[in-house]
Image 1 (spheres, rainbow, N blue to C red):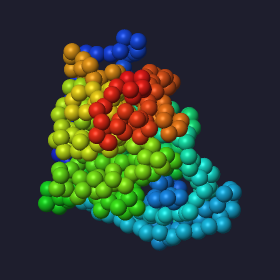
Image 2: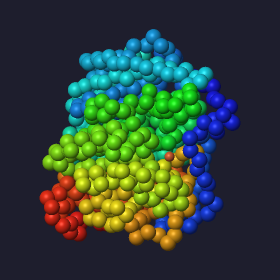
Image 3: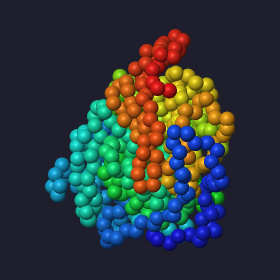
Length: 447
Ligand SMILES: [Fe+2]
């Protein structure tokens, strides 16, 4: 599994071009900070036997269930997970499915997916994969508020990635959200394996919910025209559980939040399957049960960085009305390697009933930071900074949530931006629009 493609071919296969900018045109005056350059890619090896699990990660898989995913080089290992609430005592067992794939001369290991449950909320479970190797543990999310999400985009596998993950892991959270661009393998398949090993200490302990970015596409003309071969095999998300027909878009509910993962790199126009699925999914939301609605996608709809300008525009035009009318609270995007937080917006104007848009594509990948923002600044953009870091969305109750952005200051993590948010699901003013009344500016979050 370890052979890399020649560098020239991998460049040809790479699906994204990202310019490096020579200078900084904007930085917040209250956050003077010397920005570092990209750091080298780390290749993480497997040190166990061929039967031992590697690249273990978990994801939410429908009500009270978790999917455990891992890979073995030995194709004879069973897709079986033993688990229980005490270390070493497994009083439950579940069997699942497995897959594998080829990409040119690369053959993946056996990729196991096993759904376990029903599980109790806010409970630590101990588990073993395939009957071999070490014991892992995870904690299920709570059934009610408060709940905390860690949000990281464009992660990659560099020394900066490692630093970001250490910062994420240094403080407790319940669910990890990733709005696209995971491994930056760019068709060099062994880098998918390396990425899985790098994130295992985190992704085996908390559910990782991801959606695809451009670096997941890996299309090769004629031979691999569909794309997403590695991504779909390795990062199976609960699309069937949420009524979707594609792993590229799905939703899930946790505590009082309805989270929608959209696909920037599959069809999204009004006659597409994704659009129709989104209409149905939004229509099924019960704001009494899930007062908070959060959307993740890769290419931002609002962006004042010079990088990737306009790339999310056609998707915005196709889908923004749906999210606005459904009173989505927050839209997270990645793709631009910087942090930017906007006010509530609808159709390029500030609107108290529109979502807050946040770009968080600064996980630490090999391409480095998107250093240049457009000037003069837009009044819609409330905070923008090209630094590596991660975000935290802590939902306290049905009304209030706290968002913060944690910048990587070398080995430290510093809260550089924060804001309190009010749920639109409990806002009388915005619910009034749904009932035919005019909006008012009584939404009282700090925007
Ligand atoms: Fe991207």
